[in-house]
Image (cartoon, helix red, strand yellow):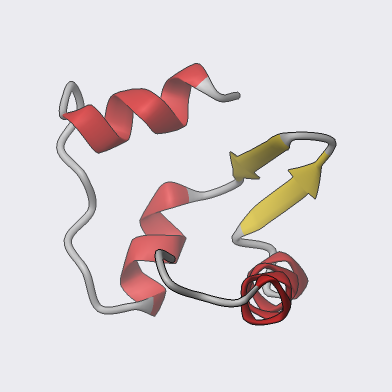
Length: 60
């Protein structure tokens, strides 16, 4: 979220955490269920091995 205020990012992360799409911890954001998160925003699920899928796996 480039160009966003800290408040709007905090609110957005809080909403995603309440919906159990992710967990926010100290200096870390963990995607709990990438497929469900993608479906919630009507996006394609990243292909295994792609840049975004790899980043999600590495941050577990």
